[in-house]
Every structure is written in structure tokens, then in C-alpha cells.
Length: 109
Length: 114
Image (cartoon, rainbow over all chains, first blue to last red; front, side, top):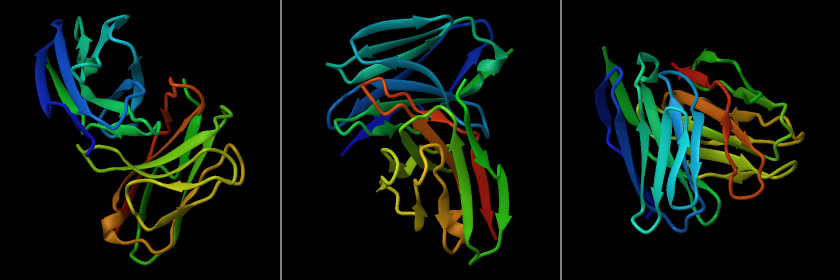
């Protein structure tokens, strides 16, 4: 079966750095997406990785290792507004997105 | 910022009623999707469409139907609402070409069936 694993919840301090991990087992791979979802709102696109390595976009970076079936989202200089759920999703061989349950990130002052 | 709209944003309805959730996008995207999401849970794909007159069922059987008569419009209909349909319904669209087929989401409809 297809599976995406992420930690359920993480806590970090304002101004710090946090790394959210995602491991996946899917039938084929056509890219990995990270989305941010604030409570009660829709997911918003953060990043896309299809090749191994690190993609940096401002305070957010995303890393992919296809051989390990592993990705992480790195958030730097955490702000209170970063409190949200972070969803990992993998596009399989049929170009369908397989979604993880999300990691709820709690930022403390 | 994606231009994708959903109405109503909130709906409370009685069991057995027929309801239609509206979704429209102004980006000319070919692919559109309907997801169901319970709080703290993953998104489940209900239906999707590759373009006009194309509809496919996703991995969640929710006793709903969709239509795609126009590129910009992808309504979801529940023929007979049940309490088990209480959830958040999210519509999304994407260009539908290439590997970087990023999905953009509407604000969602929160449905409560009494």
C-alpha cells in the first residue's frame, strides 16, 4: 500500500529552527509537495521537490532523498504565525497526490 | 494567489436533504478535485476531473456526484445528506500538465448534517 508518515505534533520556540520529517512509500514517484494549513483554512502550497537536494525559499527550505523515501521541511526564524499544520504529499506514478495526515506545529513565545 | 472559490462556506442541513457545493476557478485550469477532510486528518480524494465532460471517482466513496460542463465550474452534489457526511469539503485545481502539477485550494465548505 501507499503510505506517508509524519510526526503528529511538534513544539518549537519563536525565533528558533524546526525540522519536520516525512517518509513515504508510494507506487512510483513524481514529486513531493509541502503545504501549510492553518486551523479551519485550506492548504496553501509551500514547496515542490522532484530531484534530490535542498530547495530554499526564504525562511522555508525543503529537502528530498528519493533513495531513502525521505523529505524534510526546515523552518527558520520561527514566528507565531507559523503555527499551523504542515502537510507532506507525494505524487505517485498515476500523478495522484497521496497525502500525509500533517504535522501540527505549535510555536511558543 | 490562486483564484478558486467555494460556496457556501458553512452549511448546516438536516438528514435526507439534497445539497450542492459549488466550486469555481478563474485560472483556466484543466484539472479539478474534491477532497474531504476531518479535523487533524489527511485529505481524502472524492472526485476529480481532467477537463470538460471528464469525471473520475477518488479513493473515498462518499455517495456524491460531480459534473464538469464548463472548465471553470465543478459542483459536488450529495443526493441525500447523512450525519456521516459532516466534514470539511475542499475544492482544488491544477494546470494538469507536466510534473509540477501544483494544486491550489479553495477556502472550503464546512458541512454539518444534523
